[in-house]
Image 1 (cartoon, one colour):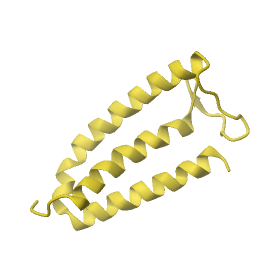
Image 2: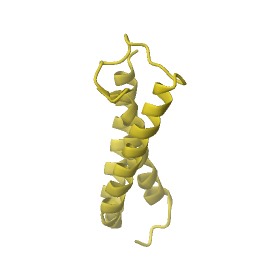
Image 3: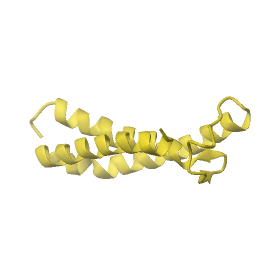
Length: 101
């Protein structure tokens, strides 16, 4: 299994739950700008720290399991998890939290 295939599962689940939150909790739309800012922040931090960790040899990736596209030293697949988290966590918060929005 490639990292891209594994990441696709996470992104589809996160995207689906986000769509459900947007549909069931109309007030959730007001949080989209904040989610966008958080997404940019976690992507920048991921780029920084992943490049450092890869650069010092703390982690490495099987070249047969990545598509080869990199941002610095970090494979592009590494950025799917922060995207999924930035979408999934606020959506779950909206869905599982109070309903008086």
